[in-house]
Length: 269
Image (cartoon, rainbow, N blue to C red):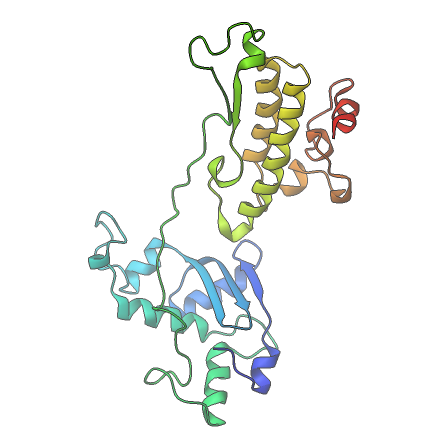
């Protein structure tokens, strides 16, 4: 649980990535054995929360993985829980932010001021739950297509117009469309943008666009969304976030609104 010491009040949430803080991550690896791609620290009212992305190689070298060739790699019997806890405590004890104490130093300070001690040799630094957990997201999935049209049951559409008018459009958004890479915040970003893409496609289709035109419209946005990441953001997205609207051309740099599209979308919302 959060502590009320002077050191604790200096702690601030942060998110660091190795591509932007190379020297810091190299020092971390040399001092702790932890080769990380990213690390996130969140300070909340209820607890302190760390998320990090260690490489498979360092987990094996530190004894966390008993057999690096085991399948599935993170099976319970292949993970040394004691080694995993020690690994995490070494990272938590490393100074990642200049001018701020480490979480271990804050815990030791709390014990010195009378707080109950936690695990043996760890001062007051205990776990808020069952301890550190490992998850494998080295392989990410994405939908091949984000839009499909379902036909009505036989006979149900008799006399109700042409095929386009009676088909049911089904679209994917968020994690169902693209499994996110969480350290870059892509889950919420892609979820927000793909929701707008879905709505824009539905507006076009309900306004009389054919299935082919709806597919083309959604696929153009989907192609941009698949390339979006921390390094590609400025080349994929337009910088004026306050001007983002339903029309994809207001959000994606390489898309141009077809003649009348933006006006038609605006008039229907």
